[in-house]
Length: 98
Image (cartoon, rainbow, N blue to C red; front, side):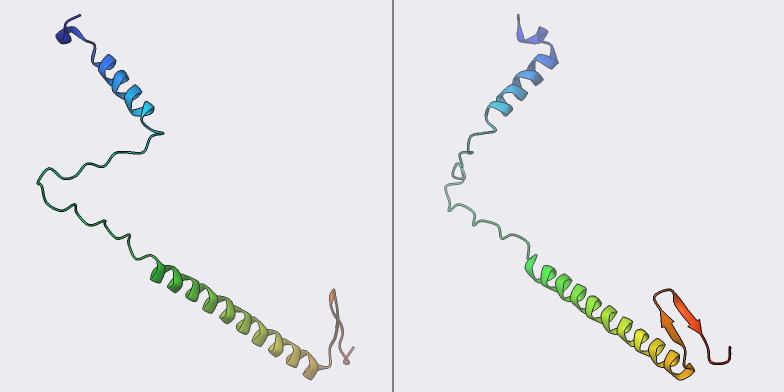
């Protein structure tokens, strides 16, 4: 069959087959055709400082939450001791005025 009458899908299917066949093989790197030195490898983006900053902010938020929770628990405990209220797991039992 002449190339002019090929179905475009046949060419796409053949290109896909070649692509899939080469997936497992390492790619060959050719030297640039300009004849000069190969380009230096590109550096990956600097993700380590951003990762450390994120971990630091999460740690600060965790410690801050613990401190705020402890301060609120201390205030509640002090206010119940001032009123003379005894509590159980279910809540307030009674007050001296009862």
